Image (cartoon, rainbow, N blue to C red; front, side):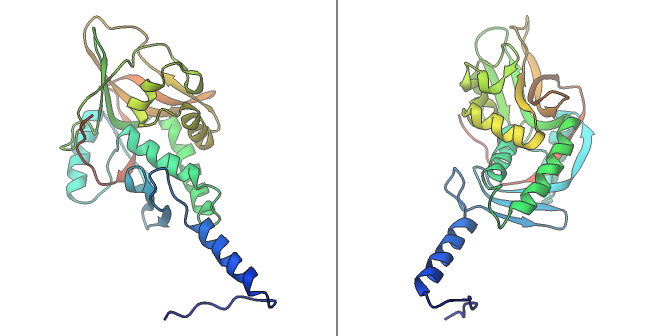
Amino acid sequence: MKARPLIPCDGNLGDVELSLLEKRASESETSDSGATFSLEELTDGWKTKGTRYGTIDLSKTLLSSATQDVHARNTAEAIKNNKYGVGSMPAYFALFESLYDNRENSRYSAKIEGIRKFLQESFPKWLMTLTRIKYKSSGQDEVIHEYGLPSQHAPIKENIVGPDELVKNTSTKSRYKALTGSDNVQKINDVLKWITGKEAYGWFINGKPETDTDRVARFLAGSVTAGLACYWARTLSSSGLGVRYVREARRN
C-alpha cells in the first residue's frame, strides 16, 4: 500500500475526504473528447494530453519561414525523426481549445498562461498550417488537412467561398467545421480572443474564381481582429508553430 502525505486535520475526517475529492476533481480535467487533460513542460516545448487530436507537443520556438509546400516536405522528414513540424488547422485548434478549457485549472494555469503569451506573440507572424483550400470554379470547394503528407486527409467538400466575417456572426457554421473541426463558432471566437485579445474573423475568397484556385490557411492577428486567413497564395512564405502528434489519414 502506498503511503499518503499527511494532511492537517481538525478532527473532522469527513472534511478531509471531501477536500481530497475536490482537489482530485480540479486536477483531472477532461476535454471534449473525454480524455484526461495534462500538461508537461519539456526542455524545448510543452506536451499536452487530452486534446481532440490526442497528445500534442508544441515547440517553444517557431519554425523557419517557408511556403506550405516546403513546410510539408520538411514536416514529412521531421516526422521520421520525431521532430517538430507544421500541423493542420484542426490539430492546432484542438490544442488551443484544450488549453482554453483548462486555463483555470490551478495545477496547470501558470504553464497555460505562459503558452498563451507565446501564442499571442506568434499570431501576428501569419502562422502557416498544412490545411489547403481548393476554391472551385463550380460546385463545392475542398478543404484538405495534413496537406502534402502521407497522412493527407480526404478532401472535405464544403462551400468556403464567401464574404469575410466575424466568426461568431456567421450563418454558415459548416464552413468553420470543415476548417477547424468545430462548428461551435462562439467557442472558436472565445478561444482565439483568449489567445489574442481580439475578436475572431474569417477571411476568404469572396466570389467563385474563373478557374480552380489553391489557397493556404493560416492563423493571424492584426491590429483589430485575429483569426483564420483562408485566401493567401500558396507561393507566399511564413513561419509556423512546431508540433508533434500522431498523424492519421482520415476519410470524410
